[in-house]
Length: 329
Image: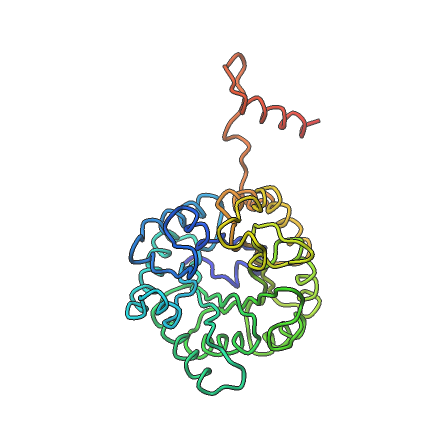
């Protein structure tokens, strides 16, 4: 039997995958706006191919492409009545791509229906989480992601603990500062989630690596459990440290794309900071994941190509040979 998430984390850093929904929009499959996962039934091969690319580039876990897959969010694009089908299909696609050696992470995300102290809101969000959990049966662990409010994150964790027996990862998201929408600092969110039994606690989306590092430091100092970090691969600014607040979002992001080497640098630095689960969010392509895998010592490109004496060499080959020689010197 393949090792589970917690066993792998006990042995070293685990590399997750990158972002899906914006990458699929840039490939022409998703209409900019709702960013919902109906592709699982309308274009399943597109998701399957991206999973395979992530796997090929070194990912050790593939996340079910069910982001914004709750009934209320799918209703905005006319797919509410296919919620279960979409979540089941997305889970099957990920499992087939993962094979026997990669982990599959189920996916729950912010519902945009949470209201603190509102009993009707809690009932509705609970029902939506439970529906997705049932439809994603058979995954190796779950990731509850993109929570701006600690209250919704805690409710997600509660449903995971009551309805599943697999590890639960909860990742918070922050925009302009280190305070959640319901008034808790990064450290306070971390301690509350830890006390509630989260197996992995972390950060995802919104911030690029540079603006996520302070949150990573605060979270790491708040507890000694397993820590996750999955930044976006789009360059933010000190004035606007979250990428959805930039004027380039959502359809002019290409000029702000980070290079593969910048994401590789993030992976190495995150490991040094004590991050246990490293991955990428929006904008993180397979090439970013490959460089992150290399930075973590999980993938070695040396030996795939070597210069041969008297062999014709392209400009690209000459460039890489110069870089290899420079490293040796």
